Length: 391
Ligand SMILES: *Cc1c(COP(=O)(O)O)cnc(C)c1O
Image 1: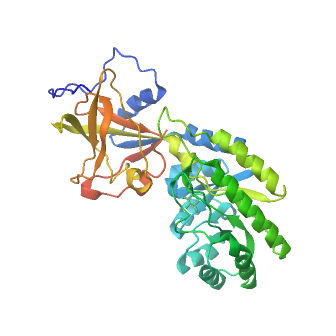
Image 2: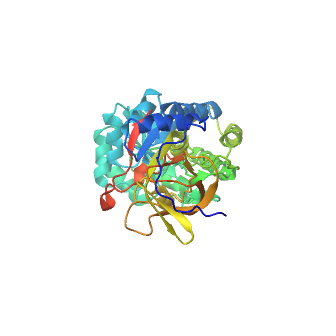
Image 3: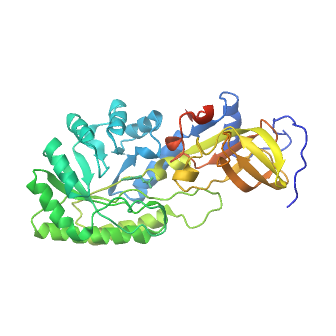
């Protein structure tokens, strides 16, 4: 790979000679005139498109947006307007949705281990649908929120999902009916089954298997005179992070999930899901700028004004990889990208192929709306995360 020589900084302005045919890059250029970097663009039209895609492909499944993926008020407001429900994991998230105008009947408190205070808070706000996966949790719910509607989260296979969500949560399906009867005995309303196949799950088998296990529990519960109503198929629906990525095909997965639902369940049951990444990930574009450069280890190192502690936190917590792009064209060189903090861990890539960049040049990443700003540290080393700009 040719190595770019270190040159004095040039104008950060992209050359006018190369027309930019990408709408995204035009948008970035326009936004650079209005906002200081780093900023995260969230495209409302993409939020709408993703919700529409979900509803079109899985028409019998009601989506409850898992706000942990990105709890920004404008995103929540957009989904409220579009009539979506919400999956919250804490009293804070519950208040966030309610204070923005969400209705309590469209919220599921989908954390299987809740503090007593948070359960009390749910009762006060009449958010009565919640999940559990253990007996101690049932006692806690029964004490603080008699009559709550509970869904048992079962442990399911997370094979091939990027983020495993069954290591910490989920009851053994074999004891499901005992748990549901226990719930009823304690004065709660056993309402359904939930599961989560792991985040960024490209393996549709996980859903199909989990649905089969759930169907067995439904039948068993019916025999024990515990009629269940709701099946919550969780989140995990995958998105493409790279332009030329293969193996991610939501539409194809949805066809199989639908077929399995029709095959195994009574039409009268209610189906819901808790998509997070799928709804918000593709809407986000992170725009950063080069604040410094150097030549080390035989390549150019570019230091950006956002990093691992900021909006690239998903590289750690979400095991995510991103496609770094620039507004420059032409010959590319093997380069390294790093964040602005004093920690060497704050390195984003040691082998990215990009054109030579100068201080002030833009590096941007698409499909980064989920698990990015949500898990960024407020101000480590004095570098705040990107401002979110809805467009
Ligand atoms: C994180 C989480 C979700 C959202 O998962 P995605 O993979 O982003 O769709 C949904 N439900 C629960 C219980 C979760 O913990």
